Image (cartoon, rainbow, N blue to C red; front, side, top):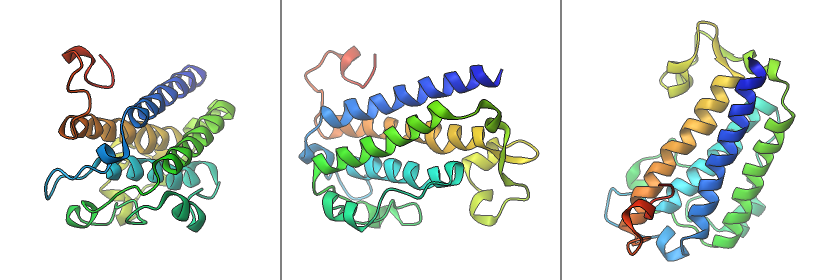
Length: 196
């Protein structure tokens, strides 16, 4: 059963990543940085937030250090060098990507590393508890804590919640924001979104 779950997870992660690639390849930097109005986060926020969060939470499941560093910041030129998890909407509405091609490279690097790791993962590791109960305060109010079993957050929970569910949530935001930024307005309704 673990092999079946891992196979499904590998395919779902690759498919979800492909939606991000499709999204960035079908938008301009102006659309990604589009400012709709106060309180509405730009697509740049969702793109960087999710990619950076996958990069940093990957360390918990794999033991590998995050890729993002000062050199990546110099290349990508994020307006705010922070994924925004602990910041307010008021602060993060100012998020912008400076160099779009470099951001795409960072995203491919992060997603490729995750997919490569999943391809080699021993299915038995899915049951391994990463964060046992009782959860620390920083974890206790998270979606993954709600999903966790009686022993705590497992490798499977972490990948499902931190990477897969989190990615789909932000892809939904991106789909909505694409309309606000004027992406796909001329396409037939069934094809205006990322999938039909």
